[in-house]
Length: 262
Image 1 (spheres, rainbow, N blue to C red):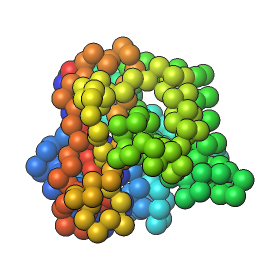
Image 2: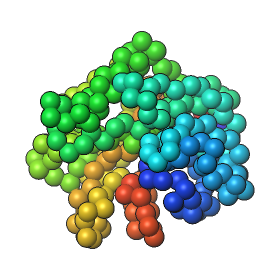
Image 3: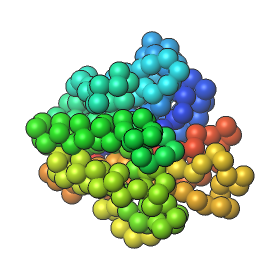
Image 4: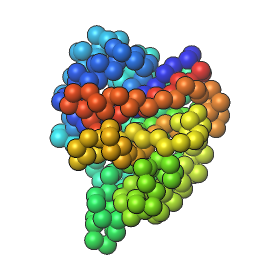
């Protein structure tokens, strides 16, 4: 059952309903995982999405912030969620396809601006979140699974516009990259995007603060698709839709795609 999956931090699904619908109409992924929906589940504007063929949804929501959703043309069932670090946030949801593949959609905390947990509570929460992700995937070691989302870490030197300049910037600090690696090692996760696009700088996020994001091109790869080793070889055709950052009233993130022949 081949399917194409996309992940996108939409930064308010209600504000950007039209952009979601446009992506569905133009790119037609079979499964679309959204983060930062900023909406209770019952207020997600589903009518337009359902009209485009996305009849199935598994989601967790909050009013005004966080929120994760999996919208699918293919039948899916709710496979649960975890409140990593006991933050009370809607940051994880999972769904299972009929072929037994489980999709984990995760929105890791951004971590604030100062990479020091002693003076920045949000950075400590991010590290704790990653620690609990590591432990969860160690004890519940996945198989036939895909992990997607805004993981808010750019792990490789070529996942940021300037490695040395960002070593003290939250999302690329050594402590975050190390913990990110521990999470992936614990679950046996493999980087699908980099398995297909192995070399060169690759970004999925550009700050709203840049006057001309395209010309400055100070991006980071914060949005990810990873898979367990047993299905990695079934994946292909990874791509990041950079032009979406130039759509009207865009999110600061763009969608990341991969196809799986399963």
